[in-house]
Length: 185
Image 1 (tube, rainbow, N blue to C red):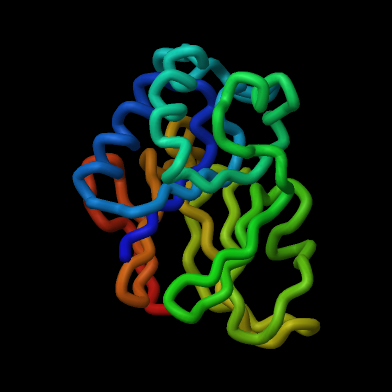
Image 2: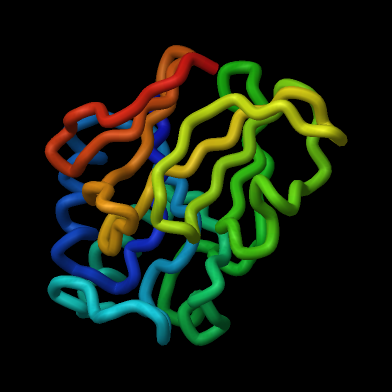
């Protein structure tokens, strides 16, 4: 089973289209969107081909394949036009015997951990910076922190990226499919 994780589309029709092409090429069974789907936010420049209505039209047909959590730029108005739930602050996913705590990252992140146990996986977006590392915490023991980066507005000199979990390995890939970073979970 392949699961794609993506974050921070921010209303870019261009990058949403590219992400969905990668999703289809992967043959992934689910797309987990880690927030900030339609709106670019007041701190970001407009992404390439900013067209939230086009993003809506691309994502809604996949409503049975998408799990999503609320980003700091997602609102009730966005939920009115998207046909899959987006307003939960987090989702717990059990995949291949692993527990993923999926959230956007503006509330829960490596510096503000949610309730987790040793061996759990925290996956979030928000920072637009990719990450895949094991971390020793005072409260939870060793956990893994993942961030697939940003589909449309990467920061820190990173390329536009998404994540894939398959066969116990999480990889961060460019929109062309090149692996930037990977970790065995």
